[in-house]
Length: 284
Length: 282
Image (cartoon, rainbow over all chains, first blue to last red; front, side):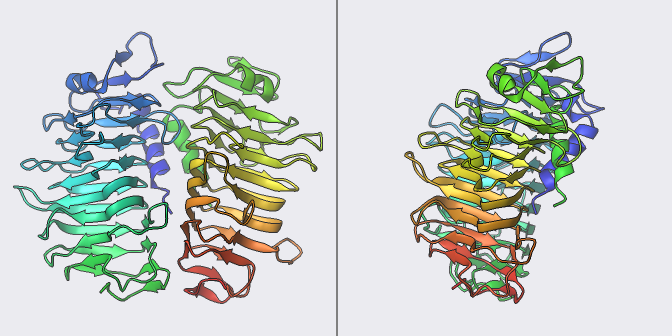
């Protein structure tokens, strides 16, 4: 289970992402100890790099804390890849200012690999894909960790999303779906990921309304808080207009006959596991 | 157990297979026939004394007869990669009283490295000590073995052990709290435990040792002569938290004293000869 990140990183390597996609424009480096030499583009901050980058560029971040916040990839910069160099988990973005959010993605075809993203203690989200009026397509994330005091990650009207082998933790809500002015979140595929220490919900709606079409939650692990208490909800997607399949997931619950798993009629419940075993019964 | 090569590709993705990833400082080589273009050092101990944070150490595919190795807390972000075929690179002390490797720094990663210890020593691998709790230790495709405790997590946090092997020991993986607190967010997936006589995953003592332990898709086998260990799992304190899911145990049923978990650890479906069971071990 959860082999996708390394495979994808491999794919990235063979595709030349480590030194820039074959069709990439520029490769930028941010962080202490960044490579130097002719043709190496070193930039002091992620914000400065994002302002320089154009479509198809690659940004490689050093294995360290990057104390920046309110970062944004505008809709005019599609096809951006951000890779965290170094051991898994050692590269993360963590705002120093309490009110700051982490990273907002408004462009199509953005990929994050091995990057942690958090928000300031008073911020709203660690990662947000989309906004009230912008619905990015084809966001991908591999081996990333999202966390924050509010919402760790939010899909806001995004389409064709793949979150693979990621971690959503230390938040009120691990992953929130939110429709926007363009419509619902569509074709959201979350696989091999791990949710833990989310006090309110691991996966949640922004309101009791249709938020997502074609949600596929496959082979994820939903754990409790570390002190053994359960979140208020593991899954809260109560509107019957949501569609998709939830299958092969493990929930740290005694049974699925609980109010902690709430899905509307449009979401199918393929067998998922609790302490009561793999159950074909819909949560009730 | 198919994840090893893709993981190596992750190393390749960061270029650590060639000469360190983009932000690494130095790449060192220890072993016979090490490349002449690299920084060649005679021993692992000497390399660890030379390295600085973010350095990478490549070990040759051979037995490295060294012990009591330590990565101090000041040496964070170290990556140690065993070159060659899987399992061909291993650290094995010659002195019976020598430990294998102690990790005290954050963000240490081991890839394709075997670790053993002297027969009278305490551990082959220890992550943390009585007063140090390293974060984000990762091991991929490693084999850890020894006569007593093969691997010990001592107050470590945010640990990933993937596609590793724990064998030929009394206790394969021991969880032990320290003066700072419990082990936290320990993720063990797709690993193989075999030929351990006392416990596959065991507590140091009957007390809280771990929070958010996730053991997923691992296989726990008997000893090669068919005898069962005293315990496959022994985590009896009710304050431990986490869950076991998708694991296979080489035992007739889970209604056995060889699987002991406290109330804070959840038991998703795990398999024995009796099939995938929904019943907690009792």
